[in-house]
Amino acid sequence: MRVAIAGGTGFIGSALKEALLNRNDEVWIISRSHSQNEPKRPGLNRLTWDELEAAPSLLEGVNAIVNLSGESINQRWSTAAKQRVMDSRTTAAARVSKLMQSLKHKPPLVLNASGISAYGISADGSFDETSATNVTDFLSEVVQKWELAADSIPAERLVKLRVGVVLDKKEGAFPLMAMPYRLFGGGKIGSGKQWLSWIHLTDMTRMLLFILDNNDINGPINGCSPDPVTNDAFGRAIGKAMGRPHWFPVPAFVMRTLFGEMSTLLLDGQRALPRKAVEHGFTFRYPTVDSAMNELVGGR
Image (cartoon, rainbow, N blue to C red; front, side, top):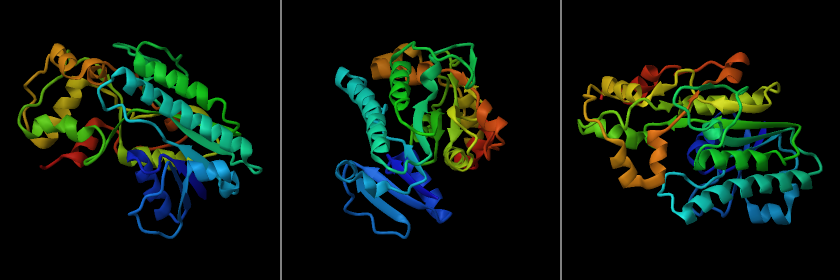
């Protein structure tokens, strides 16, 4: 398979690149500029958006485009930062749409990243791909406009992958989430009742490959485990795997004081379920929070 990845130098994109190369697929990384340090590798090609603007035919013959581009949300949400987060996603989708329109032989699949926040903040609801989307806060507004921008992409098969919190030992949010437990200061955040829809990076990568290989998958699909948990249960699972106490609660007002509006990432959530992936036969290597924690921090 020949796959182009926009955002292929990021957290999830880098893992997908390695997985594709490991199975001898050809990969095109699309980024804003060329890296000066990464060595050449068999099957790996690099293009900039400027090069594709000038010569979109460079991607003729690819089988799929995966768009994972987007400004990190892990920063204080100033007015300027929020605009960057929004613009980076809608602009990337518009670029992919323009690129597709320029290709004579369009790849049948475009897989565009999205987010679990599509369903809005909810304390007691459960959401699968048949559930209505809802704008309740900044992140759900971002996802709404992100998916609307993606809808303009003229692909035979357009998949919108609504990604949950992706867990990895070294990258992403998890190292910071686990740090208080390493220091014997872990505990629930806020009420502890807010839902966390998560997925191990290994399963996120495997799901991306599963979508690339499964022609029956179309439309929105939830990229999360079948075991969403509350913040309190998530913390207890970290403590159990590490052999650390779960005892030091952090009040909500402290998080709001420290992080401002961005504190919603830890104080709010939604319970999402991967119904479509499971119905199509996808199996999780880490289906429960305990199995994920045992792999990430167990025995340490």
